Length: 592
Image 1 (cartoon, helix red, strand yellow):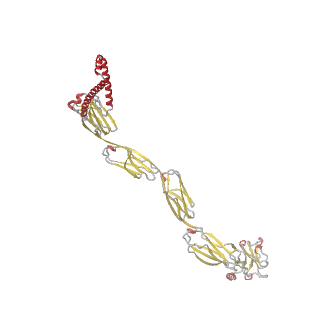
Image 2 (image 1 turned 60 degrees about the horizontal axis):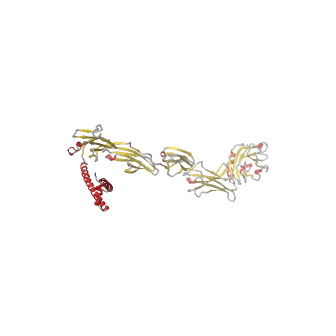
Image 3 (image 1 turned 135 degrees about the horizontal axis):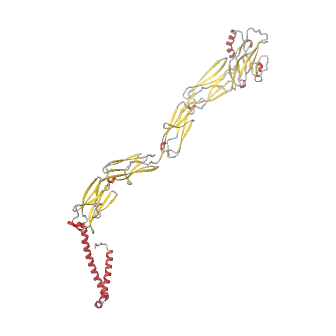
């Protein structure tokens, strides 16, 4: 038997050792439940002892001292043993050959423990050896698993089955290996300390996908129903292989948003949420959420989720856009410039989406519409028409805002066409109108009299008025000699401001028209008188027809002159009223 082969070297050693109380048994031995186990044993005793009654042996369980009443496993003098060992134990060694090997059959987990041998050589020569053999009864095979399994690194798993039962030898088979990448199997048989163990090693390279996968080792004994299995779940460590975050989002200013991050790694990582270089939150978990409340435009940007579990680092970013209406545009301050100058007007704002910028002057579009946060309006060689209010209007789909500035263009005075002298009933009226910025100062000069008329001189009804950038001055020449001397009016108008001055001679532009009005009025008056005489005659003629005897009637009227005069007077008054009514409804206007 294989057990005696293991004991043979020990027996040779015992012969060479001087007589002492010694025993050689395996310190540890294992067996599967319901199978058997052989505990190899060799003992020796002092050579001076005489054997008168032969050699007897006892196996104890748990304790070596009889006085503590340990359970008796086997005893050569009697078959009385502890109930848990009845019919299960047998001494298969020859005590006279100093072989104390014990066989235990049909063992259970309750038989796990220390076993001690006691030699009885008769008389006082009884000795319990302190050395023991510890039996481990297994209900499933052992699998040697490394402390750490790392993805993409070679892994070896070894399954062990004890082979300490001469009646049966085990067979080992790996289970659930169909999805392993290129698995390899090797078997080994190890005999050590008088015990034997059969092993099978499974070698492969795990991937992150194999984390949590079940593997099994099955031990069976041919020609029996004994089958033992052990299942393990692989704990494969791997660096983060994916980091999931929200897709980039657009949210309105003032609202709230929650950013989610999930990391696939083993062990779970340390998750950090970063905004730029600023860490906003961290947690050791497989997912982490970042809540942002009452968002402002300053919180727009790139948010990054970083997962780090010691085996690797991975991150994913998303962009958070904060939508908001344009802010109030920033424009130049109001400006005062000289005519002919060129300036640039700048307008800047912020908004999301990017706003359009429009320049308006006094409500009318100037320049071009720009889709940007900055717009520049170039105004070249400005003239007085460039004076006014300029407004920058910023718009996007969420609102609008605007800012304004005023541009004042200053220029030298300019005489207006309305400047002239005209004949009126009181004499001659001269008007001088000019525009300029600052408002022009107006003075009149009468060269024939070497007189300057301005607001300090009240002889000629000097009057002045300013409306915006337009100034109006007026004088009246009351004396006829001043009005019609030499059939001409000699009046000069002087206009001036800080940018220049000019003097102009005012023409009597309305004189011919006035004379024509007098002639037309005279002719019209004569025509009216003639019409009245004709109308009176016509009325008188009708009256004669109506009376039938004009001669008689005339005589009667001459006899009473007062009555005749009253009648004629009434007829003339009636006729005059008819003529006036006719003239009022006529389309012609007569100058009287």
